[in-house]
Structure formats: C-alpha cells, structure tokens
Length: 393
Image 1 (cartoon, rainbow, N blue to C red):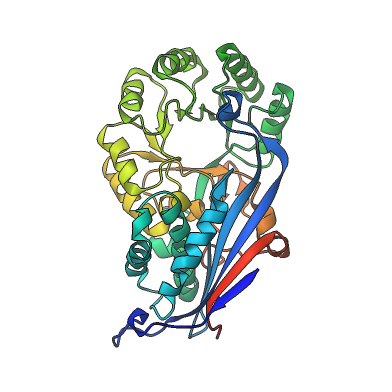
Image 2 (spheres, rainbow, N blue to C red):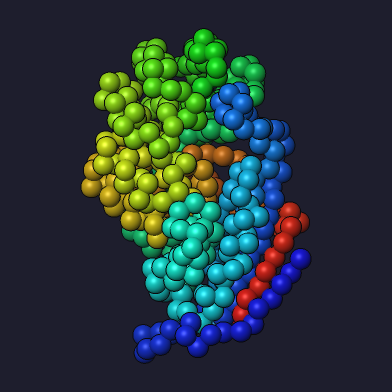
C-alpha cells in the first residue's frame, strides 16, 4: 500500500542565508527479510522467545531540492517492525522543508513530534532510519565515505562472525561454519551459549576452540539468559579458553551485576546491544558494567546518538564492538579512536546491490560515498508497505 502526503508546513522550513538546500521528498518502506533457517539462541531454549524466521526493516529514502539523496534504515527482530513503520509515517512530514545539514535539529524535532511515546525504544528506532539517511546524504554530498566524513582512525576494522554460531545448529555444523568464515577472511568467531545445560555450552566451546586453534579470537554470547550465580560459575569455567569477551551474561539492565562480574573475571565482559537509548548506556558506563560496549545505532536513535555515546565511551577508555547492522557500524567503528570490532552477519546482503570487502581478518571501508549501499530489486520485492511525503524533484 502506498500513501502520499504533499503538504509542507511553513513552520517546518529552515530559514537563513546558510540554508542552501531543503528536503523535498521522502519515502518510507517496510521490508520483511525472510531467513533461510529459523534462528535460535538461548532465549529460545529458555522458552522466552520463539525461533526467529524474519527480520523487519524500515528504510528511509530522502531527496532534496538540489537533487541530493540519502538512504537509511532501522530494523526489528520478532516484533516491532509494523510499529516502527507506523511511527515513522506519523512523524515523516516534519522533515519536509528542513535543511538536511541540520541533523541534530531534525533529530530533536522528530523526538518532539512523537514526545508522548518517549525517547527510547520503538520511537527512537523509527527516528534512527531518518537520521542514518541524513548522514548518508551528507557524506554523499561531500563525495566521501561516511567514515571519512566523520574522521576515520583507520580504513578497516577487525571483524568477527556471529551468524554461524547459533544454538540451533549442531556442533559439527558450527565447526564447518567457523572454518568457512575464517577462510573467507573473517578474523574471529562468536559462539552462542546460555543453554539451560551448562555442560552443553562447555562441550561446544571446547570443540570450537580445538577446531580453530588458540590464536583465533573467540567470543561467547549468553543473550541475557544467566542469573548472577550462573554467570559467575560459567565465567570462571570459561577463563581457560582465552575468550575475547563474554557477551550479555546477565539481564541487559542489570548494571550492578555486570559490574561485579566484570570485576571478578579476567575475561572481558561485553554488553549494551539491547539498550534503546544513550541514557541507558550511561548507566552501564557509570557502574563500570562493561569492558566492551556494544551499542546498536538503529536501536539508540541513529548515528547522531551513537556519536554522543562513542565520545563518552572513549572518555572512559572502553572498547567498542557495535551490534549487528555492519553496513552502518563499519563506518562508525572506523571513526572510533580505540581499536574496535565489527560484527559480521550475512543476513542483510540480499537487501543491497553492493557488498563489503573482508580480508585478513578485517572489514574494509570502500571508496563509495556515504554508507556505500543502494537498495536491491530483492529489497523492493520484499517491501510490504510504503509511504511518501513531499514532491520528488
């Protein structure tokens, strides 16, 4: 279904000599990406969630009076995709007439347009798609990859694979997946843990470590499914494997528990992916709850918010390993001063015409301007709803 709005409020238009361009048109697209195999992590094995069969995306495409364009996206797993699209549709008109360079101003305007639903969660995840599109447009207009516009510290980032290590996959398949990932140039492997039977986790971890060797960075992710005593026991049992980190050992909002665990283990503790605002991450940092912080730009409101959090994380000398959405996070990680990691998922590849270059354990920033991606025909085919505002130049 396509709906179109063409009115532009005079109050929405930016004024002043410094304004050289304005947003004239935008299109929202709700896209449902089917997964080839139902995905299960610890949340499924503990009965809290069902296997994941699809990922819902909210794409925003923008065009200005001068003909500049930008594309951004947000996403949701298992639930929330239609809600993101509905909220974005309600606030979209607020962008028409605005100067696309005024990204911070626009972010605040969108927050106030939907103030009743707050400044975290679904609301800011919908705003994130607009925000990412504005940054993409800004970098494209400058003729620069987004990382270079932000001020890159490096042209490539260490990367590790997650999509091959889920709990639904038999151990032998996980070993094959790890071997294939490393052969493709990926630098590290993450294994899902948090199974109700801790012995099962340790057996799989032993098999993977023996298979890939001691030199390959190896991470584990419990997806919030341990309580404090279990996390302590499992963390101690896993010390001998030389892990790069233990991810989400506790409930995402248990800052004190994460802090106590991080202080007691030699293995670094990583968390943050499920938090939906900068303010929630501030609590982690205030409690020294993570050695490695894992924000997700689409979840916390986009690139504008991510940059605020990155500055705070750097101030506290935290490592950074953004969650999912490598098409966005490669650029943000490349601009982070402390050597970061980026998470590799191949799930999103059908959505784009271009693909990331991975070799020698690192993901490389391309010379393409902006994020460096255009929507594929497959993405158009998976589109379930669209909405347009303004008039396309």
